[in-house]
Length: 639
Image (tube, one colour):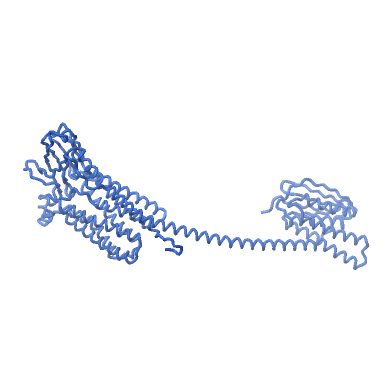
């Protein structure tokens, strides 16, 4: 209970409920003991002839060939008699024959007329293996008051050959039994195979996504078990006998090894070395036990071969009532798994965990079913017609694997979501830090730009208006300057201040606006100096990479050239032209003054420095016809 009074349910409760529901559904779908209807006859005795010319012997049914005649290969002729009432409802109704189990190859005749056959009677070890119930409708025209069924069987060594008890009678009376046998021996094993294949496919997809070894071992084990269960209803084997028997045992060995690795991947306590060695010996000993058992059973039925191999081989072979080495291996492996399951149960008891508990329960059910099948298959012929339990009990193991894989996937998903959330929080925190640093850097950059702008303005004022004010102070202090000279100096200082203010509002890259500002501010001053201003300005393109600092440099260069013409040229005309070619804007200032030498000091050096700063080219030429200053401004920035 939580503090708010709500009940906290474990996260594994829902998967456990699903597992219980599936098991309950499986139990409900499994039919109970079918009761035959009226008129049905159970045939439990036959006359058996194992070779031509031999006397028929009474054969109780069921017949389990590996127990009745171990190590022998034969084609047996079994004859079963039954009566059909001559009058009444049973005589008018159609009759059928139900054989829950027979094999390996067979042919059935009724009163001398063949009804059906399967497999090849003349080829020992043929790939055909009868595993499903036989249901035949008996033709009414062949039925007589006294009838004889002749069943010929090819029975291979160690292949579970034989004949169960037979049911004959009205079709309606046998249908419930037919449906039950089909469900137990065909439909349910097929469903178990499909379930294991689905679980294996899911595990493969999860392994491809997450590369967790648990998914890989679960996929391998379930795939091997799906093929193993398919052998219980798949009658046409891919290979002959005994190769296919060894392949089926190989599937069991693969399943056993994968199951052990799956258990280890479930993070039980670290598995001891002796366990790993034992499971390895079990996997290696299986093929050897199978081969020895089959060989000894074969030798027991072949006197001529045994004579060549000696009395020991003959004795071992002929004395085999069951495949001894194979049974010893099975019992040893079963004992190992029983001990392992007890150890796992103790570990789960000490440290409870749903996934491990499911494995322990499902493994215990499977081991009990396998132990029962080993006993029923070799202890008595009475169990011949009973279906093996292991393929049904292993369904619980497949369901447990499905639940465990789902829980592991949910844990991985939750961990991924937690990591994504943590990464998202860290990214948000980092983003906030970067945003804060960016704001700090931006503020510092603005402060630096403002400081540079103040420095530039102060420098421009010092070089321009400041220089003229200093000159005016010197003129006043010297007492030699005339009123007109002092006024001229102050006007130049004022022009400089006005041009500085104008430069702050010039559109970026607009040389036309810069020249218009210069003309507006300086035209009267030029004319007052006695110079005729000739203005030739085309419509100029924008110099896009020229911002306010670059335009200020252009302004000072042009202003310096005009000031030199006013103060030193002693001419009568000043021509200012502005043109553009594909790569440059060209500004040209030409006077008709004395030419050589004037303005060649600090002013010219400052003009060239400013031109270099903006990537422009400055050319100055002077002769007896006057002075020409050409400034070339690039339309594109230099790389």
